[in-house]
Length: 175
Length: 363
Image 1 (cartoon, rainbow over the protein chains, first blue to last red):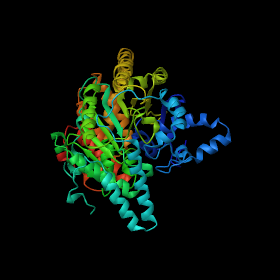
Image 2 (image 1 turned 90 degrees about the horizontal axis):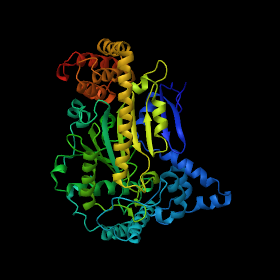
Image 3 (image 1 turned 30 degrees about the vertical axis):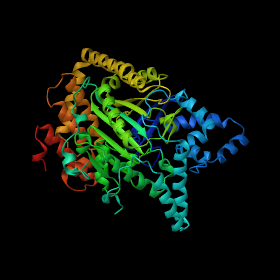
Image 4 (image 1 turned 180 degrees about the vertical axis):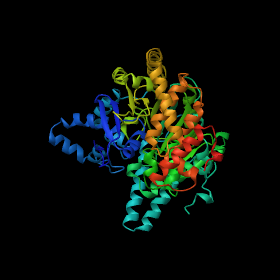
């Protein structure tokens, strides 16, 4: 038997138990098995895939529209999230809130956090989103070689940065 | 924090969590708890520019360095980007970093303490992955330590947190508590008696993931299985810790103990024979793969904990599990080895240590 991911013989046979998909047997070569087993026991892709499959039950038009929806802060589209299983920034949980909820129900069976909370207030969501937006703007300015604008934005970010930040030391500068 | 680490020295010792002690350590190898955290004012890794990643890494490092707790003073902070592949692999084998972060690109780092009780990965899938590992089934102490580190970091780092969804993570499967508690179990008797499927089935529908590694036919096995919570949102940390530590792990441990007793009662001679053969192979082989090594070490470990053999000490076996892996072997040898050479050197290393000799005299 060949490894599921390459041409080498499959010498590891791994059973992954995931809800709601159930046990899944994987046949892997030593190298891929190591990679697989060294990953944390989080089954993001299977869980997300099955939750998203349910969303796919929606009509094509609705889904197409959803896929094109973009986060105004980090610019990730729902399509990109669906493909990668990874969100682009904290604001996505606000911007895609209604779209993510069915997925959260499917994965966790709950939609509300219970447990530890940070003791420090995290500033307003708006100001944090603005920071992330500015970082993206700076990146875009650098890309179009508008270094003057990039440096303006950098100053703006510096001014907004978390006041608890310790002063940067000389060893902090990029070498 | 020390800005580097001596990797040759690291390869020579196993971590605290490999010492083979702690509650239920005849069956439970280790308890690991990790928390996923992100900085509030940066995009998640997927949408980070190179500059963002660098800023995150520098910000986190500067703030960790500002912490005065003695805990951090003895820690190492290692920039993973310029590290050699073997050194990164060494950290993977010790479970201080994940394979993902080892193989990814760009600014990334790990902070870990000298006795390896904890590590904090910077720029993995989330900006921060804080983890603590302990030997045996030790949920309470493991959680207390990881929670304390989280509290300390929270004083100097603004976390992404949502009043409704909790700690925000790059993947929605980790959102909420960001907590994953994993217990690594050695279950050879359940494998021999072909009861793992039953265990798997009984674990379904209770929000835990069991993942294992087993052989088929003539193939080899290490008989190790990891149990972890699957959900992270809508259950408190205390509930998730209790689910794995008080409900699931003790149940599997009990199954394994029963299976071991049944084996002793009905198949003692067969089992003793298998354990002795495993010893024989590892003590005399001239070439051996890491996979086959794991298979035989697993049998020997079972033999020791069931009282079938008295030597070697389980600590030696744990050490061998770690040090016969590729990067460790190459660090101990002091040079890069090809596959065939590794097989030969591994066999020599096993022979040497099972004869009761130590590293210093191996060459």
